[in-house]
Image (cartoon, rainbow, N blue to C red):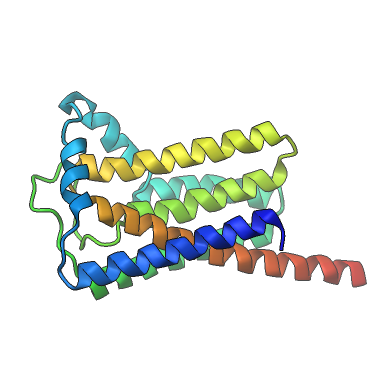
Length: 215
């Protein structure tokens, strides 16, 4: 097994364990030390920064993700002619959003009992912004990196994507619409889903490549 693949499977296994652990504990109505202490830390963010985090949280919302996805689909279909990639990211995000709704209904965690600084109309766990946002932006980063040859450029894409996702997740806590464990759960479920999507994408990509060679 290649070293890179080994780390990927280790992170995936860790994400699965964390997702299961948090889900079971929340379903059992148990509390988390992290939710109280990390939420208190984020509560110290000055109010003048709220508009910035409101803007960031829109990037994890359906409209924000939809706009970004349309731009990426235009790039994939019209410029790169990567029809498989376009289909893969569309299905991954759309189905991932449905899985998020299913998980919310299954676990049924209520939102924090605080003054919500952003509009919410669903249950709390896992955070849809964290989960679907990670699926979308992680997959986009993966497809962009596929096209890059420079190691430095690849690292910059990874760094930018990680920072964006962390800020989107932080915005949900700062705006008092999610517990920290909602966001962590969103990240773990999102990572599991997007890695599954990428494995399937690469499987069909390899099959298409082999068929072209035979043809």
